[in-house]
Each structure stands twice: as C-alpha cells, then as structure tokens.
Image (cartoon, rainbow, N blue to C red; front, side, top):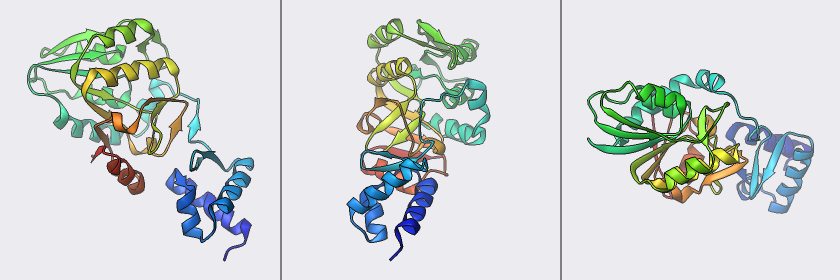
Length: 256
C-alpha cells in the first residue's frame, strides 16, 4: 500500500502519460476507494498538476482557451497529418459526390491531395482551403460567406451557419482541437463551434480528421457528441484506451 504522497505522485504520472483517466479506473488500479481518489485529485489540482473533469482528470494543459494560429498548427505533427489525409482519401464519395471541408491544417492536408480526376462539389468555410480548391479542375467550389476569423482564416457567424442549414452533402470532413470519450469533440471558440455543428448536421456521413495529440483533451465548447461522428481518422500514436472507448461508443477509428 502506497503512502498518500506516493499514490498522488503515481496518479499524476499516469494522467500525464495517458491523458484523461477515470476515477473508477484509478481506484481499481491503486486498490483504494473512489472517494480517496477524488481527494487525491483535489490535492493534485490545487498543486496545478492536473485538472479534474467529470468522472476523472486530465493533464493540466488539456483544458485550454489558447488557440494556436495556422502557422504554428501547420508545423505541428505535419507527418501525421499527411498520413491522416492520405487515409481519408478512401472515405471520399464517388464521382459527382459532395463534401464539406472544415477549416484546419489536417483538412487542408486532405484538400492538397484530392484526386485530380475526381469530380466533386466541395463546400468550405476556410479561405486557405478555398484558395487551393479553386485551381482544381475537377472541383466545383462553394465558399461559405461570413466574418473571417484571423486566427483560423475561416468564415463564422450567422450567415455561415444559415447557409449550411440549407445544405446536405455526402461527407462532412471536420477537424477537432479536443476529443474525449464521454464528452465529445471540442474547440476553443464558440463561433467556430457553431459552424462545426452546422457542418455535422449537413453531412450524411461525418468524418473527423485529428492527430493523436487531440485525443483525451477537452476544450471550451463541444460541437459534437460522440454519437454524432461516424469515423475518426487519426495516427498510430493514438492512445489505445481512448480508441477502445470511442469504438465502444460506435465510432469507427481509422489509424493512419
């Protein structure tokens, strides 16, 4: 039996290594009650080591309002994003099909490698993605209007959401800042979340493209529950426990 300080250090190490962990799982692992684990988590949260969430805990940096700019995001996990985009090609609709492409660097990676011989109707809120698609002969491009946020270079607001409400596409491809079993798919900004929700509603099939660093993380605003998403494409670095929970909830997980 570990002393409380030793147990707390061990809990902190596990949360840092694995991302989100449940109170019940920690109680079973350390052979203590859930009440004891909750007291330990409270101590660790006060120390700034982790943050408590419903039913468990996440690393201190996993809940955040900070939203990196496009340049920083393009540099992060670039190899994984290319692999994810390549795997996502298999999820494109057939010829004359329609897609929505959310803003973000992983969806942008998909836009970069869309087959030149595939005729598609592509709808996007992203100015950089629209710029790429506008020169592709096989793509009929529909750029959504609205206020453009500088940090993401995506259209947001009532105009954008209203336009999406009139659309129905074969596949909606979205990005995510955070993915947590039991909570869902999240993003830091409410305006971005509203557009993403509208994209989810517009898609007959909803596919999220996100590298493994997003798994086990939660951000301020949820835009989709787990059951709203059909497929998650991520990389082989994904936490096996989180993947298992997502699959149990009915999400098909593709590892690129």
